[in-house]
Amino acid sequence: MDSQSRVAAFVEDNDIEAPAAYRLLDTVSELGEVAKEVCTSTDYGDDPGSVDVSEDELGDALFALLALCSALDVDAEAALETSLAKYEERLAESGQAGSGE
Image 1 (cartoon, rainbow, N blue to C red):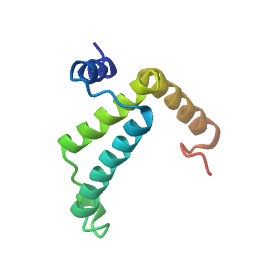
Image 2 (spheres, helix red, strand yellow):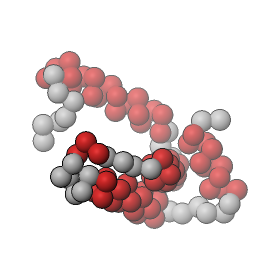
Image 3 (cartoon, rainbow, N blue to C red):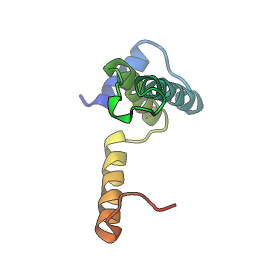
Image 4 (tube, rainbow, N blue to C red):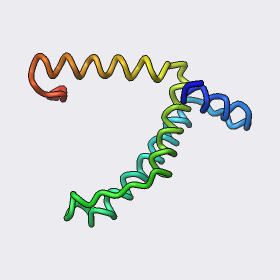
C-alpha cells in the first residue's frame, strides 16, 4: 500500500474526513510549523547552515499534503511525476528548475 492510500485509510478508519479547503488549511498550518523550526534553528536566517527540522514535523506536513491530495482525488504519485517532468524540461531548456516568474 502506498503512502497516500495509507493516509486515506487512516483518515477513513478514524472518521477524520474533512473538505479539501480544511485539508489545505491544515497543510499550510503544518508547513508553518516546519518554517518555525527552520527560523528558530537558523536564528532567523543568521546561520542558514544550521537548519534543523524534526522528522515529526515533516511527517505531519506530509500527512496533511497526502490527505489534501486524497480529498481532491489527486494521485500524489502522478502529480509528483508531472512535476518532476516539468522541472527536467526546464533544466534542459534553461539550465534552471525555477519558472522565472
